[in-house]
Length: 117
Image (cartoon, rainbow, N blue to C red; front, top):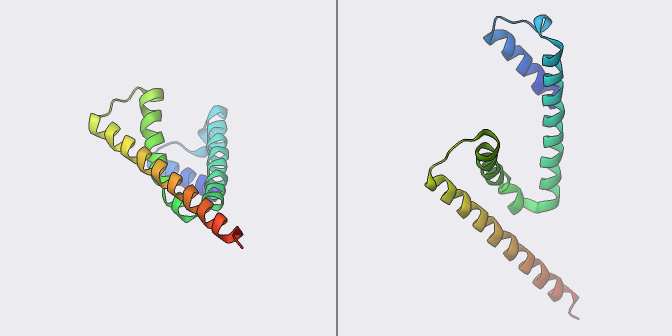
């Protein structure tokens, strides 16, 4: 998936700019390779989270990514967001926390019920 994504990205670069891949400086190739490696790592992490977390946790991955993107944009890039954005991020975090607590409680109750003779 990451290799195909890198090829599509290279094609898009050729179509939208006057530069060609041959004219890219060596640092540019390193950046393309780093992007492909990071995307591959992200895919592995994404699928591992899907496997380990179950369907409910998996459905929340996009929301977690959005909150992390807002936090990263603020901390790393110096972006400024409206208070409503931070409030929405807080509600997302609270909702995920509640969901995970309830999932663990339900899992413990089901395990205790199964072990009762």
